[in-house]
Image (cartoon, rainbow, N blue to C red):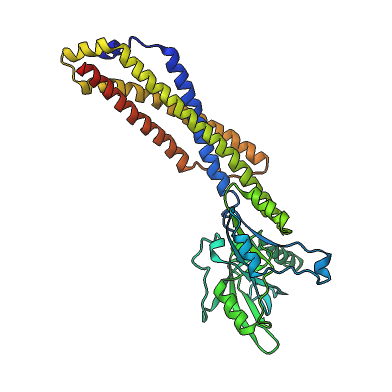
Length: 393
């Protein structure tokens, strides 16, 4: 009876417009937050490089071939790269300064041996989720990250030898060893694979092992820096790419494509996210305004009920529950629309060869709950304020 009395003077047009705006805004808000997170995660996990990180080197030209120009970096050049506003950090890629070979050391696997070069990078640039990525002098095993191309070559050798090829998991169980040497000394070191990468063409070892081996077996005291790792700011990869062209630097095409894609899509989603936030905010204001208008039109009914003994808290609760139910229905419809929209977009991305994770993100759902909580709180304050104003009047 009270509810019918309080809500009989409703003008539904403004309410419907606010509901439609809130529905569209919440749907695009959920979608944009979800895919912004998924785009930032794209390329991670399967690779060892951290987000927005690339390995670069100087372009080789005729001048380099004739020894007129150098392909190694100076410390001054590294400092100049670090000064760029869109660069987070720059660190050299250290390479072995001694002879090293890599071979199988497992009775279950035929002998395979190859001369290789090994490298190490600053651990902050790696996305290795393993406690095994460490080494100190005296350790019996050196953990390594293997370039996937090397595994392909190993499987080609296995196939030619009439032996079944090995998967990533099986390769991690095979025993290997390094042969470290210079003109006067030689030493063996047992190694184990802890991960694979498509982005680095060399075998990666911990920094501590490289420093120890270079000091003990290094042929030349002068360590040349021919590659560097650059970590750029998110959504500013276009500036990084422009800098590489200006300074005649280059990187692997796969790294450039992923970085360019993440930057472009991330920027577009940020724009959609901004529009969605504005839409939700404006529709929320319209709903609050509608609540205030409803209270204003029902001033006589509210005062009458208060004089009949109804408490302000009870009347506040009626208005509060009404609008939280309205926004709750909008939130549920938005969530349903988001799930259907997400299923369609995931299928579209997969058909296009862009394999973004299909799991739901906690942040997107949390944003829905946060928006609902904020609206409920503001609705309660406005309803309480309107009821007590009528009571005092």
